[in-house]
Image 1 (cartoon, rainbow, N blue to C red):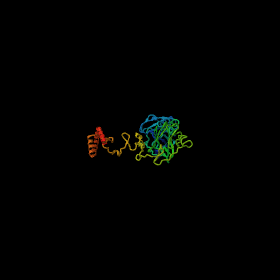
Image 2: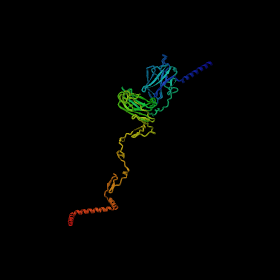
Image 3: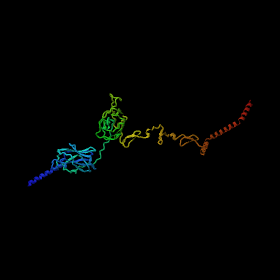
Image 4: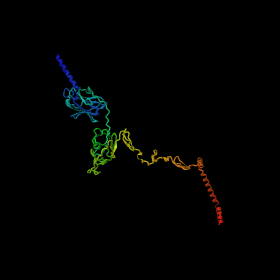
Length: 477
């Protein structure tokens, strides 16, 4: 009896250890949990216990697929559907699922014991969460497959727990701020070709924007921005790399105006805007020999070519010669083809040129849109009156210290010109003082008065004087 009891204890201990070992064993199952998925697969029970005594192979009503709402909001399940590999049957979900809740679903299709893939599809976004298991996972009536760690996608074989969290519930990671793209501080990359009107429908693709990398090394456009009249922001990623001395085109779908428009390329330190004219089918606006022009030969991802018969050509087609790269700290101006200094940050930015100001939002220089920008400069010796915006003479030392006015005149304080004195008692006194200081003045006045009197008397008695004169002449004879 004692020997039987010992044997029984050994068997029970072995069974207990075996079961616990199986509970801790990670399942041979893989899953796909896309970023942004609010609801995910959390448990799969493919080998449910038979509930139909008349049909030992019928597992319906016991096998299930469980889902988990990992978000902080209630989710409408009408946007989701379940499916499995090897079957065209789709099970449409209904109702809603509260935040942090689990729901076991008993689908209309069979969950295969020997292995397969079950999928949960969010129809509006197209996101698909899937779980793939094989026969090697050891599916049995005693165990189901539980997702025990969402970040790593780890599954384990545990006892079935429909509508409930597993013994080790998946812990959600703390929400992190989305990683901001690296600042786009590249140089030596510029727009080189615009294809805005491909033949056929623009919505099917075919439009493109091309860049040229004049550097000796590859350059990533991550963090850079592209703007058009129909596109507010096209952000580049780390995979958008342009090899050295290479053209690269980026395909767009109905983001460019056929009738002409503007394309702007922005980096952390500069902004390049290119205006293009109306384009016909399969025509392009291309930078050829440092000049933007219309060409009938669109060449995305290749050197730009002029239309046949234009300019110096190799055969019938002009071949673009890429300019030598600018020195360090400079970039090539696409409008002039000359190298320009790269604008630095606010702390070290150089002063903008005449007629320009620094944009506080973008730290780039821009034209000052004022009326004074088109006014002709004043002539030498003149200045602009801020009140009237007209040119006026600059007040010099000669006008601030003018020569004294001549006698009998005074300076008008309003016009700064000499004017005749008005006779007043005060002025008379001043004249008397002047006479005292100049004694010849009285002699001159007396002489003038005597001459006037003598002339008058001579005129009045001219007849008598003439008679006396004749008498005197005859008497001498």
